Length: 577
Ligand code: ATP
Ligand code: MG
Image (tube, rainbow, N blue to C red; front, top):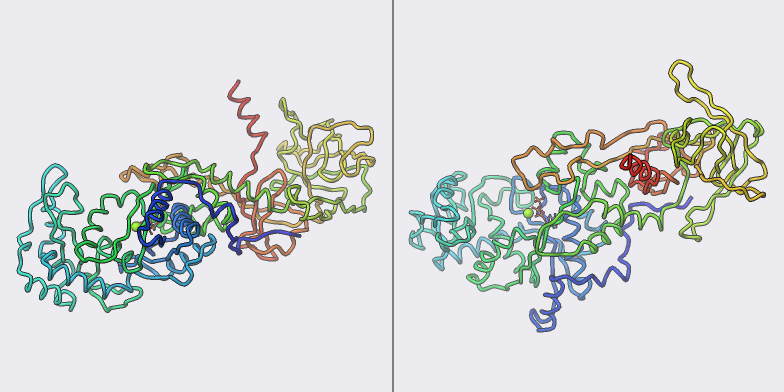
């Protein structure tokens, strides 16, 4: 049975390399044309290894790697691992795997900001020697007090005018471990009256006796992100340092450091962060979901993490096309989750093999079908792709159909099976419902009885009579059991209050985001399907084999629903009435 799995990272198609126009791309084209940076393009994707990557990061990855590819440049992968307390090797490994899975290659240029700690320290000494940095003895709280407000200038630290020699001596002793955590900082001497808070003598180094995941106990002072980021770009010869809008106010500070140090000066360009409806894209919040057990882990298929949506069955191609389609701008907005699903469906429609599976089985007995006969019905694997061929599906007297495909009292416009009505069983025969068997006590429908027309093999009547509906089925004695995991959005709120930090974001978690159907049934052709294999369950949705699946117990994740036309009709009927 053909299927395609999620373990491969699909190569970029021709039409993905030429990206849609946007202002970042236009700026780069301008630089190439004017010969700035010798016409070179060198970007980087700089994650902080304090969580798993999410779909927002994919936007940044596609932008940075995509621009490098388009203009024959390079893109580095760099871990911004300046904070020793939060970073873990697990995150580093997952990030490497995720970027690779998305289909991008850093060609061996994998770097760590922590590799630059020696150089950064030398630069700190240089700025101190130049009288542009000083050791400050104010506590963190005092520094905040002195910083002023947006309307009032800050006050200068009483330590601001320490002689250079004293600063150099204290900095060296900070590094040597003579002082306790938080007792001193190294600050840049810029402008306490600047309207930009970032320029009011920002801290460059803090004392922190903490072990770092790469440098161990070598350091007990660590550079602030703002002192490390721009210089790391400079060291790597980055030409265009592309980051999200919240760093716009930090750009003057990065420029200041690079200028005072007199080193290579990349061009920083800020773009809008991706926000999606019905989910959160903040590593802190995602970590909370994991730690408090709202989800089973970073790769829970409901998570917007790349490992989560990969497990869910998303393809790298769909994610890249989504990222290309949303564009890049200078104002933050919120993108509909359904747009991501749209790109996924487009891709899966072309590539996923069709099979028949029943999520909520109801017995259908064909009374006039021979008891022991089993016919092999020929079924098309993918109507979008003839090369995927056909398969044979066993058909017999007792079938299972979707409970939802039968109504005892069919509402208007409901054309599926109901008493007296004839429908087509996909790839098989036309059948007519004769009667039903119910549980006397509960009224639950136990069994549907039909007769079939032997002249309609393949699904068409020789007399040309039409039926309005085709339903799918599996043969009860041949079907495999499986567990279906049906997912819905993680959050009920469309806008999850990402803006409002005071609000408890978990309050709008969807209690029904996961529904397990333990007794679903599927045609036997999927026997042996490996985790990651994707299918379209005809009329039901796209599914993939979960990594929890074993030969004894098949488990499928619902990747995305097909557009449910009946649900739409019902909705519009309700709206009208
Ligand atoms: P978070 O706020 O979730 O902690 P972050 O921005 O701190 O995210 P980083 O690891 O620093 O996460 O991000 C690496 C890169 O990805 C940065 O260049 C950042 O600007 C970009 N990025 C992060 N989130 C998004 C997003 N939602 N949309 C686009 N780019 C993003
Ligand atoms: Mg960050």
